[in-house]
Image (tube, one colour):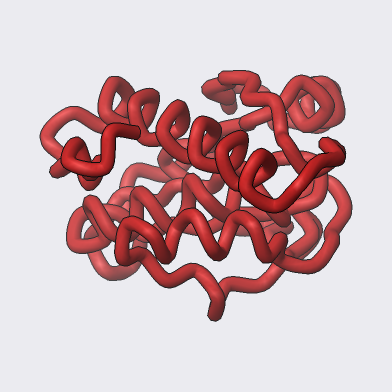
Length: 157
């Protein structure tokens, strides 16, 4: 993984990384693609992989963003690729990458706690996933100024 200004399409490239590429990085990929897919090529990966989390798919569908076609990918799928922005979304991924990065490549890091290990009724779990989605969305607004914000204020979230 190396730093590069733009992709072949002339867009900056973004890679979101978390532990399993099933919740946080998938939500971030879907949000940024919906908000600014015309300006960025967006990818996500995990240190390891697990299937796409159905609760993540559900809360994204609530704001009319379909991530059901996205798939979990290991970071090794991107070996040799170059990215303008490499972003870790959990401490595990950040620490795993710390010693493996090429000299001069910096990683933007923001830890988000995944609700995937929580136990409870479906509505309580979905509330946690909505909170995560909205936290990631707010953070993306700070990191990528000028991208339209898709938060649905009418839903009170």
